[in-house]
Length: 552
Image (cartoon, rainbow, N blue to C red; front, top):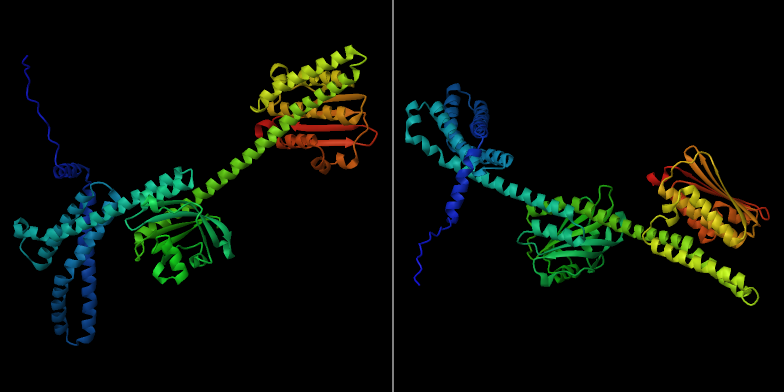
């Protein structure tokens, strides 16, 4: 079968030169002519001021040396002609570069157009000045001779534009590096951001060091490498690398105010070998100091070239050092906060386990021991203790599944708070055989969930302590609402506590239960008191602000 086809037109991509030309021409409408005309004319005024000042100084000198007014006038005229001929063009050229640089850097767009057009305006202005002061006929304005004044100023404007492009590109690199450093979550991400955006061709390694030991004024005497960036991955410094002031004497010359450039050739033999072992013939040591003046680390930039880094490159790294110090200090604080959070979570789990599982296991053991003692003679008592042990074991299992998630106790989810406390007291009385009473005073008000959990756990712990230690026959639990405060009192008529155990300091050295209660209450801004006399019972009182859970 013969298939008819039509020729397909293949589009040829534009050449790079034509594409750049189109892009350059497309920038012309963005030019603001006010920023062309006035800066271009300003070049002429500045030129007049500078040349005129030089001529005035020259005339003042001649008037002192020459006594004849006519001779002075002739000499001044001749000198002014020479000064105007040989000084004015370079002054205009340099001034055009400076003005074009300032304007292009400010505008940031169409910089090539701004440079060329400012140069053209300054050249036309120079031509008009020559025509005016030299008495050249005005017909020159319509003559092609006028354009002989344009090449040099336009070249100067283009050079100023190129210089501004370099400055703008440097600012962009600093901005991108700053943004990347701000997003960094690890030391390696910090040095990667610096190396990717700021490293020049003669930079080989960038290292971020933590301080191991500090000497006078906080100056580091031993540092360890946290992270490194390198142009050759095979030659990368390894984290954990250490430098000490004994082998690297440059550390002793560091100050928190300034960076320290080094050249291996100028160093003592031992230190020179230390740096050359790291592949560095020159480098820059930048102290990382927070605004409060504390050292947080050290930034090193090394080069295989013996001439060192350029001044602009050094300035870029020093500019970033302040932000690196803040980010590194923040990472350290975050790590400390994470460690603190882990410790608090461990303490929370310890309290929860003590308040739930440990008490449940204690109850199970007591019921099993009681069942074992009653087993030979009284099967009914044995069965009752076994049933209570089984019930407690199931409750403890349910509590264990909830402890890790830090959920509210199941009792509080299904029962109002005051009724939950009443149920705890009733169940405790049934298990312990001690007469217990629960009372509520004041107008019942809603409590923050953390306040409810704290008071519930504290009542369970206090009742558990009474059963284990007090040998009491009666107990009273009172829940009082007084204004913006809720108070839980647990009283018994047991044997009481020793005086030391009843004091606040005694709580810190006593059993874990009292310590756990004290920590819970303190975290919510409350207070815990223990009043007791040997043989006269004990009263435990906890007061909490109603809204303390929200503020904590």
